[in-house]
Image (tube, rainbow, N blue to C red; front, side):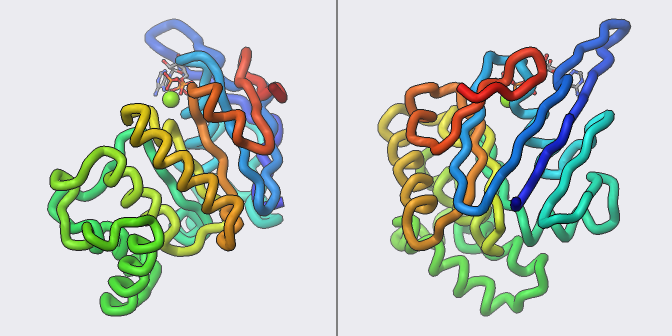
Amino acid sequence: MILSAKHLKKTYIDSDQKIEVLTDACLDVASGDMICITGKSGSGKSTMLHIMGLLDAPDSGELIIGGNKIQAQSPKAPMIRNRDLGFVFQFHYLVEDLTATENVALPLMIAGQSETKARARAQELLCILGLSERLRRYPNQLSGGEQQRVSLARALANSPKLVLADEPTGNLDPTHSKEVWDLILSLNKGEFKQTFVIVTHDVEAAQAADQIFELVNGILIPA
Ligand SMILES: Nc1ncnc2c1ncn2[C@@H]1O[C@H](COP(=O)(O)OP(=O)(O)OP(=O)(O)O)[C@@H](O)[C@H]1O
Ligand SMILES: [Mg+2]
């Protein structure tokens, strides 16, 4: 398994109210998987993904990545986030004053690559994702779909074992949404065999996944 989430529990305290978001959430992700997580707004999908991505810590339960138990607070967590995991968010979170190439090169340079090599790899990825004409553009000079493709390229930069995507098409119109979904599918099915866990409220798009789970009452149920 690339990642196993075991019995995750997460409760938020909001003023004096206790919100039990995850009660006993379990998920196994194997290499090459394409897993979609659906569920109502507020059901805890983002919470689950953030915990899987070491961006947030559960109250209890375990996260095992590459066979090792790991906690979000661990000194090793930033390196695992940078090298083993890629993230795509609903809002792209690209750095506005960096070009498409520079945005994708950034995680490579953080991982220790030279600027020259990082730029070359960034350009290669952007070309694969159909953005060869957009390399020097800034995020605000790109369409929503293009911005999401750049953030997908950024997520793929360090050849992560797993890409976690939170509503990657949630902010796009149907045409751009389909474009990004098709790209994700081709990355999963094609030579990359990229493993994905994708949170989406788009139940129709989720049908393309090998496995679909619905988050209900803090538990992931096969849909
Ligand atoms: N930091 C926080 N403090 C308090 N409550 C929070 C916090 N983060 C999330 N919540 C609550 O936890 C619940 C789950 O939130 P989460 O963002 O995981 O839901 P979601 O399924 O991703 O929803 P959406 O589909 O709207 O994105 C919600 O009720 C939310 O209000
Ligand atoms: Mg969410």
